Image 1 (cartoon, one colour):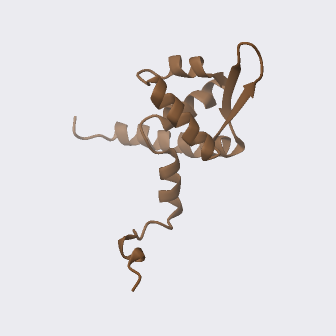
Image 2 (cartoon, rainbow, N blue to C red):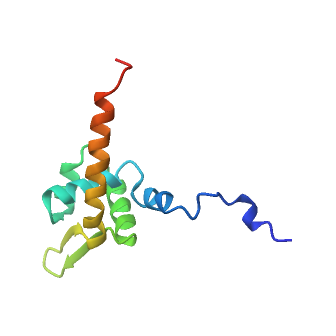
Amino acid sequence: MNNQGLYKSHLDNCPLTFALNLIGGKWRLPIIWALNKNGTMRYNELQKSIEGITNMMLTQTLRDLELSNIIDRKQFMEVPPRVEYSLTDNGENLIPALKALANWGDRMKGNDNSK
């Protein structure tokens, strides 16, 4: 008897869950937003623009976003080496949805009755 499917979530095939898994996490959205706002950026520029991120987290998050085809990493064979990051077409296509989500958040914040 194969019990592998027993522990699977019913949300495994949900496109929204898939999308949130790609962009979720503490640092992914700030990186995506910084690249949207500033265009192509170098590593140090990204690190300075995202308060509180460590080198290790920035490096790992950039790798994850690159593997997900949300950002592009372009390395120039110069001395010293130069690396630039930018949004891919997939990353650019994400921006209208993020703007809509931000607008929704603003409206919800404005309706906050817990104040």
